[in-house]
Length: 147
Image (cartoon, rainbow, N blue to C red; front, side, top):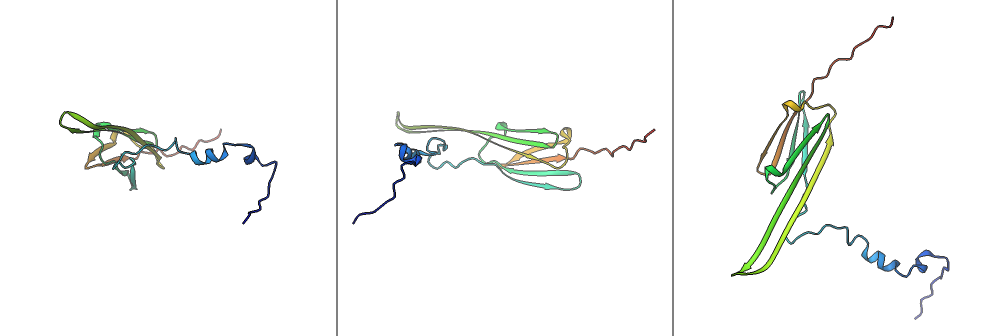
C-alpha cells in the first residue's frame, strides 16, 4: 500500500533537481553517429616477428590506398586511414535522401626493436595492408677500459 523510504537530508542527489536527467542523458552526445548499414571503422591487426623482420597484416576494408598513411619513428609504427562515403537516393529529379560520412581511424603500436625505415615496404590489396618492417641492425655495446 505505502512504501516507507528513508529520507537523508544531506544527500547530494536530493539537492540536485537535474540528477535524474543527467543520468538519462549521460553519454548521449559523445557517442558517434552511425548511419544505417554503416559499421564503425576499425583497424584489426596481426603482427608477426622472425629473425630479421616484422610482418604486419592490417584489415582496413573499404578504404582507398591513397587514404592510408603509415609513419615509422624508431620502434613506433602508426597507421591511419580516412574514409569518405556519399550516398544519395533519387526518384527522378527529386532527391529523397542525401547522406555524407567522413571518418578517420588510427592505430599505433611499439615494437621491441627499431625498424629500418629505408627498407620498409607496404602493400595494400583487397582491404588488407601488409607491412614488411626490417629490423635495424643493432650495434654491439662497446666496453671502455678505465685508465
